[in-house]
Image (cartoon, rainbow, N blue to C red; front, side, top):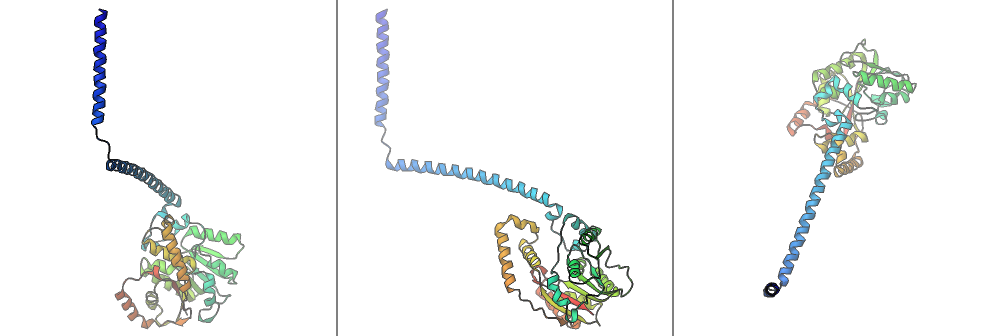
Amino acid sequence: MQQKQNQQEEVQEDTQTEEVQEQQQKQEELPPMTQAKRQMLKFFLQQWKLKRQQGNQQVQQENIQQEEQVQDKQLDNENGKQESLVFTREEYAQPNFWDDRYKEHKGNFDWYVEWPQLQKFLSDGPMKIDKEAKILMVGCGNSKLSEQMYEDGYQNILSIDISETIVQRMQEEARKKNYNLQYRVMDATQLPFEDKLFDVAIDKGTLDALACGDNLLALKLIKEMDRVCGSVLIISHSSIQKRTNLMGKIFSERQIFQAKVALSGQSELINIIRTHQKGKPISHILKNKEALLECLRQFQMQQLQNKIDETIVEVKLENNQEEIQQQNQTGVYDPRRQSHCFIYKIQ
């Protein structure tokens, strides 16, 4: 029995020895890895690592984009509904538009130009306004023009606007400063005053806003200002052809003086950004650093080149029809590209 068990163990050992020998023989038969195969394997491993890194970077980039989209939505929500919309021309002519806008936006804003740029025209020459004059400031909005003129010695100013929100706010600001300025809620196309109660009406942007909707409203505004005031001063960013054509329907036999004035720095920058954004909200420029820097570069160049002829000349209304036809043939007028506005004084 013991002898049989020993024989089985010897057979098992011989079998294991044969298997080991066969494996060694097979390994010896395998050809050694050539240098070319080693380089190919190395290249494969490098490509695999590279693709893996690219995949990780793509995932990281997608995560960053998702975070930016969330931040953009949060920014739009924080800025409110008005900041996320692009307004149409027609909206500027709607009374409710301005009341809603003033509820959303605090602080002051001056369209086109500010008092320091207007002062030299209104202090001397054919556009002069006496400091004792009784002034009607039409569509005052949140402009500081009434306050600045008051500080410069114009003590008799009534400012009107169709927005109750802004009238209350501006009146409160004047009260805090102890300024004897009056603000009243009023529709400038239907003034409750008797004829020629004021010496001069000043409009900066109201005519442009109403003309965005219906020229009939714009004409009613001009007629009412002319009815209650001895003279009318209009500051407009529209083309001189459009404005003189509109005024010519009412003031065909009146004397009109006109001057071209460079936009304020703030207005110029806004126009450049609006042109660059091509219909997108202005606030979106803050999300694009390169676009913002490009707008600032254009702004600096424009400020250097902005040598506007600011001489006062008398407008000849009858000579403008040919210019209007030429403008219609050359294309649509884009006021965003205009780096100046016009002052008109109707005597």
